[in-house]
Length: 205
Image (cartoon, rainbow, N blue to C red; front, top):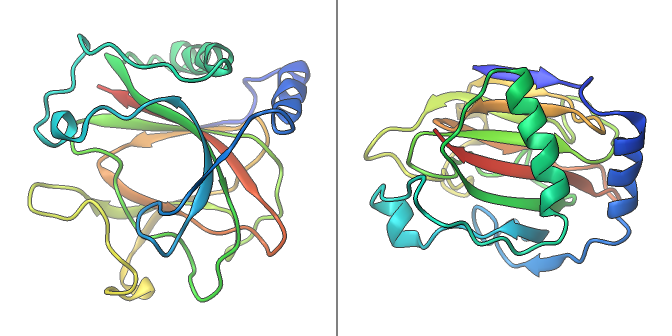
């Protein structure tokens, strides 16, 4: 399942998102998938403790930790998307707003999954950026996670050409993308001097 929807938000809501980018406090994170790719993030719902995720104990009974005053606005948009597309989820595993930037020598971030439990990845793109086959797009690979596979394929140990692409999605302000979290995924990097902003939700199914 891969769903794209770029018609859900009003112009007013898109304007609110654009204004948020000038207000939201971002923190520098020294690694994403690996230390090759630091980024900036604004945490809205904390990841569960690692042992819960690793042992598949995260459930609907787990009380999420909300860390951002902006969460209620983006939760409202998320729930509208889920209602329109008939998506029912048990809990929010985590949510954040990420800002990524250009890295030379790599076509995309390390292919990875976010969690081992059955989940959805939902992205809401927060700005318009130049996009083509080399920059900015989100990539869903034709590769599924299963027990014994790594959470992340380090591109210092794997060729970037060995990963077959299932779907490539162009970012656009106000556009949603949803896909099954079992698929390894990554993003292409922005053009030099640009930032790519995206709101991320991981939903427990």
